[in-house]
Length: 267
Ligand code: CA
Image (spheres, helix red, strand yellow):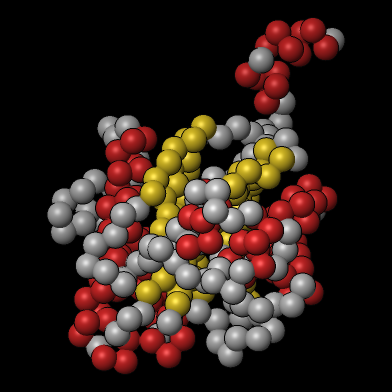
């Protein structure tokens, strides 16, 4: 597996309120987009990623297990990911309640954990996860935003949503309420798959066909991550931009190893 991340404040915003963390030993990747401006969005996003990593590194106060211990089924891992995000929500909310300068702060979160061939994914807000498989980019998450909700209900087209001034209105966020509903999913990964986690500073600036073209054309995850961010800036850089690119390499000779009949047919 190869992984790279890149973040930039963009060309308009005075500071970067996005945060991300990569925990290689846990195969855990977390990205958060802080909101609130004066209400310390950068504090909320940093708290969110730290809380998720910390919760999953050690047994939490409520005794939930580490992700994917040898005895745990993958579904336990996804459940732990959700509970870690719920814990992050409580921490951010309580911090906001105790500190008047942080009142109302919040963030998005998207978190991915890979165990073997199984991906656990959880998110709140409009930061996204994409699967890039066989040159096709597929959005794995559904935005918790007003315009996305309107599109799902058939009240607004994708084009209208992309042009709307209400794009940044979220229907769910971390820290703004005492509790939060976390969306989670599990999928099977294959060698050659790539995952992209990103904040809306990428997806509101760079069309999906351009994102797919960059992932197709650039084999290096580090250069691809940097290119995605620079492309968002070339399109205006209206918001902070953060990306994490994860690529599952094809082991040498994996066809021969996993599909013996295939190699013999090719000889
Ligand atoms: Ca943003």
